[in-house]
Image 1 (cartoon, helix red, strand yellow):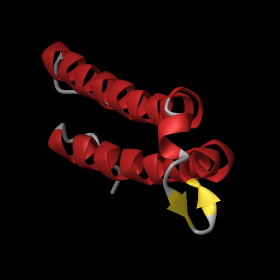
Image 2 (spheres, one colour):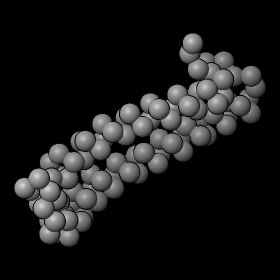
Image 3 (cartoon, one colour):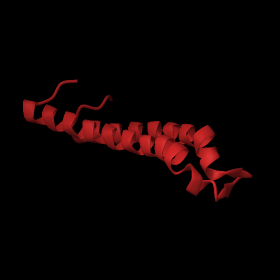
Image 4 (tube, helix red, strand yellow):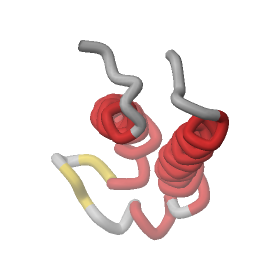
Length: 88
């Protein structure tokens, strides 16, 4: 990856780090927050025949994690194009 100058490289990595931190925060909230901390509140709701808190702890966090991978790929590709470091 070759950047035109140091400022563009710093901007790219700064935006990339913010993106990763946001996605990790979402994942942490879903896995830890919904699966452990908010489980009693969410268990009052039924989803596909299961209590929602239980579902998040067993399956939902994994689904969200996989979805976040796809979100990261799309956002990272857009970021690469923005800073003109994308692959052709």
